[in-house]
Image (cartoon, rainbow over all chains, first blue to last red; front, top):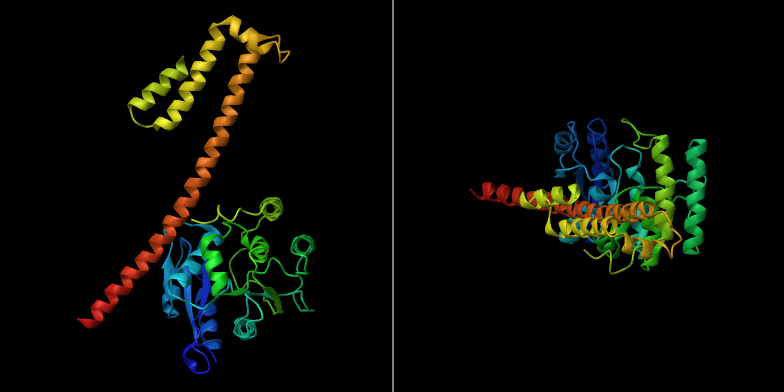
Length: 242
Length: 108
C-alpha cells in the first residue's frame, strides 16, 4: 500500500520524538514498522540521558541525536527538517511514549493520499471513543477546542492531540516555523491561517506505556496562558522565515 | 560612577560587547548628569509633577533597567532560537556524515 510496496511511490516518514523513553521506544518503533512497512522511521533523541538512542538503534531505525534537550517543538521540527531535506512526501508525528496506536496510521494516510487534507489529526473526540481524560485535562481540552474553533471558523475537537500527519506543504510550513513548547494547539491555527486543509480522523489512544508526563500542575497554568497568547497573537509571516 | 567604572573594566576585559556597554554607558551618563545638575533634574521633574528630585532620578534609573531587562530577554530569545537551529543542523549534519562514512565502509 505504501512507499515501495507497489500502488504508489510516495515517501512517508514517521517522526518519533523521544526524551528518556528507553523503556518504550523499542516497542513503539517495532509497532510502527510492523503495521506500516512502507514508512521510514526516524527517532529524534532529544538529549536523553538513558538508553533511548541504543534502544531505537536496536529496533532498526535511524536516530538523530540532538546535543541539547530542545523540547518537543525543537525535536519535532528537526524531523520536519529531515523530511524536507530528504524529499519526503508526507510526515507523521508519533509520540515515543506509546500512546498513539500506529494501526490507525493507514486511515490517516488515506486522507493525504486522496488529497482531501493537508494535515490530518488523529482525534480522540471527533467521535465517541474509549479515551477518558481527567477533569482538569478535559476542561483544558474543551477550552482549547472552543478557542481554536472560534479562531478557525470551523469545529476542531482534539486540538491537543500530537498524532498528526502532514503532506509536503505541511512539511515545508513546519520546517520554517514550529512552536518550541506545547506546539499542538498552536500549529493547528498556524496551519489553517496558512491555508492548509486540516481534518480530524477518529483514533484510539492508549494510556502512557511507561515514563512520566512532563506536565505538572504549575506547568499546566503556564500551558494555558502560553498557548492562549500564542493563539491570539499569531506570528507574522516574514518573522517565521529563518 | 561605580557602574560606569565596572562597565569600563568589563569592556577592557572584553567580557561585555560594545553594543551593551554603549547602552550602560549612556544610562550611567544620564543618571550622572541628573544627579549632579540640579537645574536639569528640576526642569524635567516639574512637568511630571515629581517635586522630589531624587525620586525622579530613581524613576529614570528604574525605567532604564526595565528597558535593559526587556532588551536582554529579546536577545536571550533570539539566542535560544539560534541555538535550537544550530542543534538541529548539527544533528542533521552528523547524520549525513555517518551515512557517508557507512557508505564508504561498504565500498571498501
